[in-house]
Image (cartoon, rainbow, N blue to C red):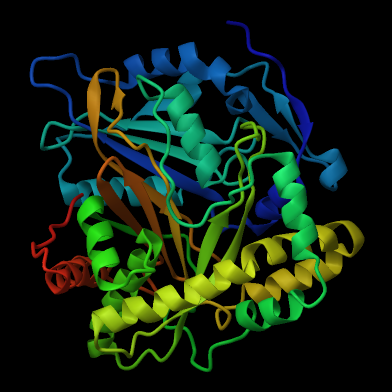
Length: 445
C-alpha cells in the first residue's frame, strides 16, 4: 500500500523535547521485547523483521518522517523521507557468542547511550538474534519528540505484533472520550481557585538534597525486574481499598529506596514525578506527545509497607480528585501561546532536583500476550531516559498478567541498580505476604 507523505509542523511539546537533548542526554526511550520462538520454528531475525516493518509501515506513516528543523516551532516540521531505507533502521546487533542476561543489560545500555541520527527518521530497531537461553531480543529505540510512551506502543502494535491487541487501563489516563471531553476538561482546569493549590502541591521542594542529583555523563546503567500483575493488584485491593496498580508501583519503589538507604543513610522525603497520559480515543498517532504529571512524596522513612501504600494512595487520590495533571497541562499550554519565556522558567522550576528526585512512569501494554512472526513475547520492558541532574529513572509497562520494570541510571551517580531491583522484588513479596497471598518474586532479564 502506498505511503502518504507527511508534512506537519512540530507541536510545541516536541520542540521543547528536542531542546532538552544534549551531549549527555539522548532524547529517546527503548521498548524491549524478549521473543521466545518455538523449538523447531523459524527464528525471527533482522531480515525477517525488516520485511515485517516494510510491509506494515504504511500503518504508521510518521515512522517514515524525518526532522526539518528551522529556527523555531513554525519552521520545524516533520517531512516524509524520500530516501527512507528500512535497512538503516532495522539492524542486527553483532555478537561473537550467545548473550547472557548480564550481557543483555550491557547491550541495552549501549543502545541507550547512542544518539539517533537526526538526518533520518528518529528510530531504530536493533535485533539481538543469539541469546544464551535461545530467545531473541528486539530493542526499539524511538525519540520522545516522535512519540511518547502511549504513541510508541501504538507504533509497536501497528508494525510489530502479529495481531492487533488493545492496551489495558494502567496508571492515570484521561477519561475524555474525544475533543468535546478535552474541551470540558480545559474549561474546568481554568476555574478560579484551582491553580494556586495545584502549584503548592506540585511545585513545592524537598528540604533534602536528592540522592540522585548530579552532573550527568553519557554512560548508562540498566536493569530489569518482573512481577505478576494480577497477584499484585489483588494484594493492593486487599490491603488498601483505594490503591491502584500505579500506587503499588510507587510503594515498591519507596520500599526499595528505603532498603538501599540502610547503607547510604537517611533519604528524608523523596519526591517522585509521575507522568500522566492525556491521550484520548479520538486522537490519531500523529499526536506524538500528550501528557502531564503530578508529584508524590514517597514516605521512605515509614517502616510498614502497608502504611507506605496507604499514604501514597491517599496522596494520589488527592491529586487526581483535584485534577492537578489537567490544571498543569492547561497552564503550560496557555503560557506556550502567550508567554513562552515564562513557561520555560516554570518548567525549569518544576524540573529542579529538589522538586522531584526521580521519575516513575507507568504504561499500559497489551492486555494479551502478543507475538512477533509467530514467536510469543516472553517479556516487554521500557527504558526511559534520565533527565538533567536526575541520575535515576524507573519505567513500568504491563503485558497480559505481568508487570515489567525497567531501570535506567547514570553509573557515576547510581553505581549499582541490583539493590534497587532486589528491593522492588522483596517489597512485592512483603505485600503479597501481608495480603495472605504469599510467594516470592524472581528477577527477570
